[in-house]
Image (cartoon, rainbow, N blue to C red):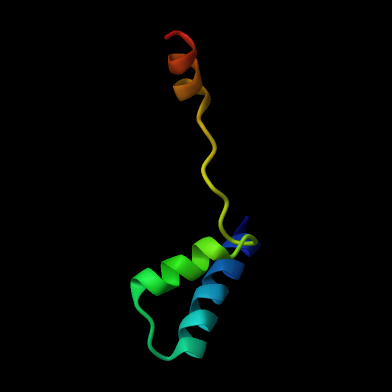
Length: 54
């Protein structure tokens, strides 16, 4: 896990360095577009159980 965190931090630093100027929104968009870094949150089992009872 520590290696994964390090890779993510290195990606952020490298992206900012290459862009020279970048807004948070642009950095966030690039993060979301990078499938190696962004993992969409899955539905929690607690939420699923609550929906299943409806």
